[in-house]
Length: 465
Image 1 (cartoon, helix red, strand yellow):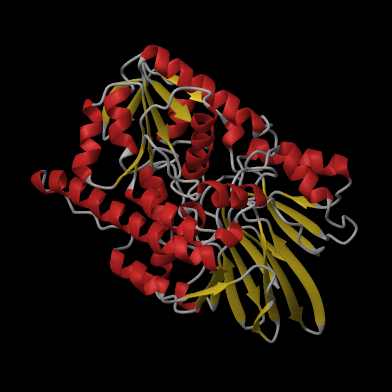
Image 2: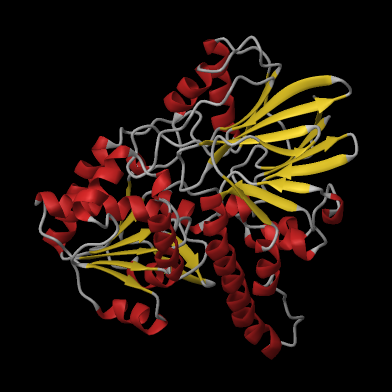
């Protein structure tokens, strides 16, 4: 069998791994590359290493756009096989992919108005809502721990990755030419002791393991610091009557923040301030969270029994209407506005940043990973000026980064998880989904821990398993 690394190779976004087994071809993940706009669009538009119509099936680790976001384009270009995911991932994709298509259609419509006046060629979106509808009809939802025989040679089992709702580690049993071997894929690995979701589960020992490395060389504060840190941010905003602008992933991070804020206000650590979740996608995905209590940990299940709704409290308002979103510009602080996207690359968050980052009294709170060349990364780097909607804005607002809220395992947590695997059995350990400096640090940690054959593939690299 051949394994080719196409996406998330020496970078964080665009997860896509291509397998060729005798007469079968399949991919794990089909994510959007995020970063420099023109360059990313060209990579996402075409499938350089295979024809979509030749792919027999897709295995999807979770619903984040950098793992699932290019599925409608795959379908648009000829793919007609099954898409295997957990049930919660399927449900999340039903709203996330529609949102992605809607944003693209609106962005293209906005840009084309200008291009038409300049007599320039008009752009087309990567895919449309119709392509998403066709994609959702191909999903096959599977429960965790249920071994599923895809065909006579390939069996699939999902294990809980503890990253976002429905996120999964992939465990494959493969037979080829009379031999049997196993392949594991971490997807995005979550952290132990986070709220809402269960801790990452160990998969059975494997012959080959593909592992993410987003924070392969960095270390997070423990999650119990999140409440303390967030309380300090709220106190600062109350004292300054500031607006706190939070670019937040609609799936996972927004719900975690709401959960922690709920607890902070309930304990009386600070007086409640208005909290607005301004993202139709966040509203929809929060509804899907409520439909999947089977993914929750014991603490959240207990909280739900005592308080009914962990994602709703006084002073919290979910906003979907555009006019209500615009009215937030007129509200005075202290107030917190959570809006998608987490890397600030699209959606309403860009409007809130454009309207508020020039005021040194305000706070931009970064609570997740921001890839290179994204607006979020430029804010994390505290560049004096940033470009939004093609215009330059001074970054005068205070920037605060809370990595204790990260849903990605850090260097210690990644190494601890991998230490559970049988090191003698693993023939090759592939490191993906990380900036190269983080991958090198993670590789060195694994070598020191006793792993032997470790590979950091580049885009297009092919390996025989």
